[in-house]
Length: 143
Image (cartoon, rainbow, N blue to C red; front, side):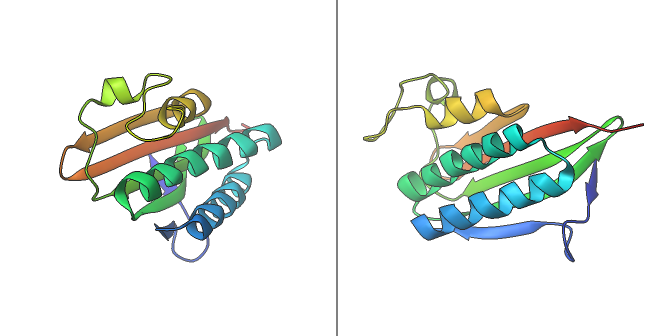
């Protein structure tokens, strides 16, 4: 996989600690996905997935970061979002990915919803050491 320049640094990195940060991450992710050629419909999906994951950071960890970049593989281009925190971690990732499971007051739709709307989705988490979510949305390259 090749990273493609997203502005001057090749990547957008944002701290996430508040509702304002969630909104900014959503806007920056949507703009980056548009530069990658993601369709208008999928732009909304990317922004929604970023919102859900960023909300989890604020709610469960207090703060963290989201890094976003345009990526290429043979035959396709897309956007990759990596959200990470040093929060309490997820005890049972499989359970957390089930619709309706929540350790808080939420509906338990954030992680499973983001997984459904992105093309690639993975969660790495260790209780007491934080969580990393990696998501990608792909578009085909025009030959």
